[in-house]
Length: 299
Figure 1: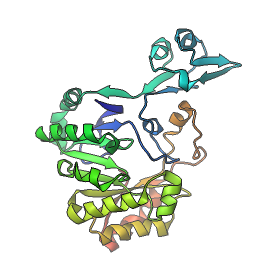
Figure 2: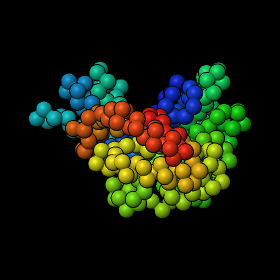
Figure 3: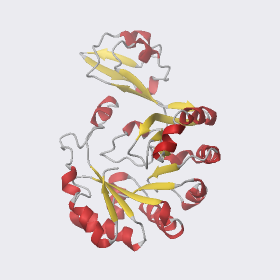
Figure 4: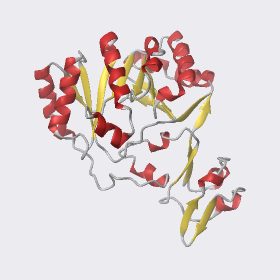
């Protein structure tokens, strides 16, 4: 079984053409700007939206584990007591409670992605595995990839690259495109802020660049107070050129995941940061041309 947080059909920002994107649960990195924090934990999680909640207490009444408390005008979840029975979700009349995480069989996923085959073929699209970190469910992913390749789908894998090279080698032949997340060349800063294993990221990138350069697009989320300065971005472009990578996608910061942080009762450090204007990154398109690297702003 494969555990996902979401399935997005008709996606257009996770690889070429029209795609179905599978968002995997589980990530060993914890980027403070993450737009999908509900993918971090492999466990199924409850999200509570205070903007929709009327504190009617229907959820509290049906919770047999007494995990939900409404006291002094505040809704609280005692996570250790919650057994993810989803009765509270069913009882809520305002859609204030949702759960992130559902298990699918390989056959179920094959059936879901097959619904849009005609759109993939017409647009030169396909299937994208994203997350979270896909590779944390390695054994199941290997089986899924084999099945999808038998159906001749174009497969993209969006990845942090933060895992052993031995894992990457087990899937590389069944992946058509690696959308490799590349945040910083200062590995100490990368590890301190995101929790990534910088040495693994570099090793996996170098392996792909040496053996499968045509399969790699570097994707750099451009984040204020982390890597949005010109020297850092230019260093990544130079790094891509050095290893023969032809495309770098610069992904401007956006705070669109802020509500999810609130719903998970986590502190979002970028709450006051405005959405980055794409125009700020347009000069890097010309800079990339001078360096022989195609730079795309946005996914």
